[in-house]
Amino acid sequence: MDTQVIKLDPVKPDIKLIRYAAGLVDQGRLVAFPTETVYGLACRVKNDSINELSSVKGRTPEKHYTVHIGLRTDVNKYVPRLGLRAAKLIDNFWPGPLTIVFDLEEEDLQQQRLKFPKQVFDLLYKDNSIGLRCPDSATASILLQLTNNPVVAPSANITGQEPAINAEQVLEQLNGKISAVLDTGPCKYQKSSSVVKIGKTGLHVLRKGLYSDLQLHHKSTVQFLFVCTGNTCRSPMAEGLFKKYWAEKIGCNVDQLEQMGYKVLSVATLSMAGVPVSSESVVACKKKGVDISQHRSQSLSEKLIEQSDLIFTMSGSHRDIILNICPDAGEKCFLLGGDKDVPDPIGKSQSVYNECADTIENYIKNIISEIVI
Figure 1 (cartoon, helix red, strand yellow):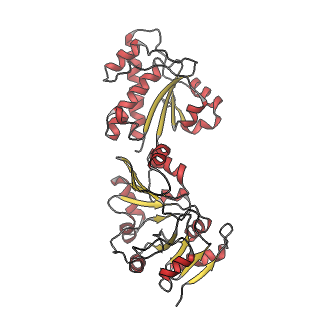
Figure 2: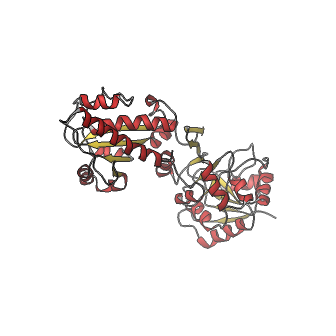
Figure 3: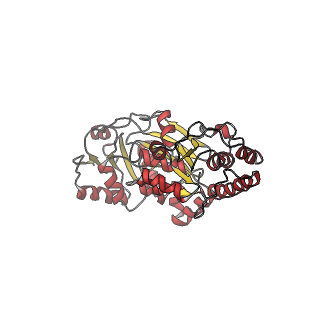
């Protein structure tokens, strides 16, 4: 029997027809559908369906496939805790032509084992990781939202042959081997998605696609910003101490932080640029193995606020200044001490600076312990 061709408008596809196709997928049938890159082959995540998919494509059944999701928020079904860089990749590239392989901690995997039947879990997760893609296609998004099972979707072609970029090419290779193809015409990009792996060891590009390595690294770099009044005492100490403990957490040297995808900066709410850090702050940090002697002050700006992913202020008044400049920054701007200000030690004795550094250090350790890599 020939494969059923279901023609759809690429902008406003008929939901009834897509619901019919989703029903086929939930029955264990294979359905080709368009993404913005190439046509995919939707398959429910169950052993019998995966075996049929592997047979049709000519691949070994042991190979794991990428799960496709209709909405980027669906990532939470498969990855319980997102790291900062992973979340930023999703914000910047989904929906879109990027496949992300997430490394999961054992506690997260255990949570997923309780969520999915063993058969499904074993098909979804391999080597403590899972690959996810959120395509930028109205038809794909609706189809994936209407299915009642997790769906994997490799390219709709026989292994070793070129991926199909239109329904005609799907039929040339798979006519009679799959139940249906949703035909919205040629794909937008006609090139496979980029594939990256993200986890504790950083970002690794597994397959080049539409995005360059530079784009992927730049758009996933996380920036931390520490703010005080003059950027000569509290915030430079916070910056230096944060760099130390964050580098320890991710397993690198301080001078490798940017290479690992993290920037740490500090600024003043006053217009002060180029002023050296106070000698007392240098001494207080030196006792903790942190050298901030080369720090020079810089001023807060709207651009820095917008570029930063997490902002920590020494007092509530500093946070108010930030929100006056960028009212939308509230969700990423916090007092370093939670609900307490860090008192300004300026003009006081070395012992007061040492106590201030101790306070900042404790707050930073607490913050870092709660951040997922």
